[in-house]
Amino acid sequence: MPGEQKRIGLRDIRALDPGRILWDTGIGSVTGFGARRQRGPAVVYFVKYRTKGGGRQRWHKIGRHGAPWTPDTAREEATRILGTVAAGGDPADERQAARHAQTVAELCDLYFADALAGRLLTRAKEPKKAGTLANDRGRIERHIKPLLGNLSVSAVTR
Image (tube, rainbow, N blue to C red):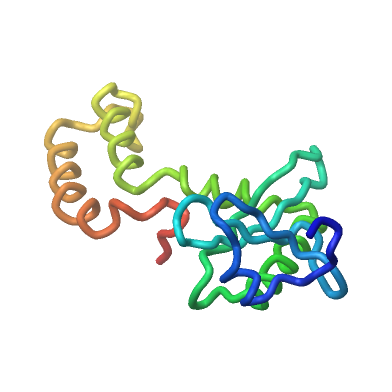
């Protein structure tokens, strides 16, 4: 019913029709927290907010209903996310930046492109020799790329 004040519960999730959004309202609710079912049987929890600096409206997906996400755990996560937003962060932007972060394999390819173009210089301010680049390529192709190639550069630690 429109205007009904209610927190999202398990019964509400099970009864949610495809193509519908259920907003968390009522006492103890979290503003902007909701659940939606698109066409399939999966229900997804989300939080809708505006960024502090630019006022951009964002929809941040928390996760699909089921382990570990229940209405209560998703509500707690929405509260945490809104706290981050209040402190000036943008979790949706951070997630997108992490998704598009440069990988170690891409960084290695850039290294070789610069080395072959002569932009990578040694301590003597000369371009690296062909033999050195051949050794580097072998180490990268046999060791670095197979072990670390799919990791983002920021995820690599000592």
